[in-house]
Image (tube, rainbow, N blue to C red):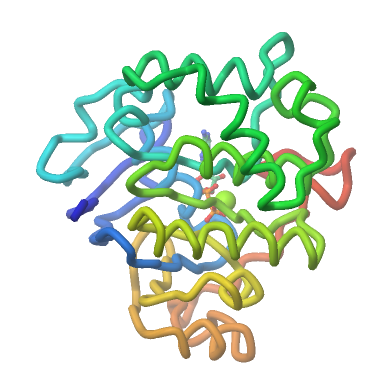
Length: 265
Ligand code: ADP
Ligand code: MG
């Protein structure tokens, strides 16, 4: 049994506090959804857990089975069993997905010779065409293909806890079903614990959620069961916002418009 425990987490960028005391515990086999308006700090939470440079942690703790995650380098967090499927997967010219996974296996003392067969098996499981596998990591892949690529990496690496930052954005209906089903299977097969950031219940059709948390302005304002996700889809976040606070305007989906604003617009 693995436990990711986030306690009173406060973090920000350039002196601006974005996370204002987040408490969240994810155990093996559990699926937690984090939902919330644009700009509420969902991606920041995922980045801070994984150790993306540029964020300053100003309070609280993150532990994985009691180990202080915040004291580890990002690669050490990955080796400890944390995985992040990025909202905007990074393109890495010159490095194939297989080479990246082999390097990860080697760093973790696993047999890198197993990687090609595992990649093939995972690609088949989620219907990811072989022709993508030889390409440089995420280069020349569509938004949806990048998300399948993230899911493939999750399948091969078999982490203990996966954070999925809007895995559903950019995926068509079939890809969404394949990817969310694969993650659900991992919760059963390897006891994967999941923290799924999403705006839509469609991700949660195959991926069976245990708890739904509403993040507003860097704080979890409310937690409920699966029914909460359905309520939010109908009623929106209005009931959870400050009365004086107008709902944030919807940010442009960068996958919808390649010339649109970047992720922090
Ligand atoms: P969400 O994923 O919930 O939409 P984010 O975590 O991406 O929200 O962003 C929360 C807030 O913090 C936004 O106002 C965003 O502009 C700001 N922010 C996040 N990361 C950075 C960064 N690296 N530099 C500057 N501002 C950032
Ligand atoms: Mg985000």
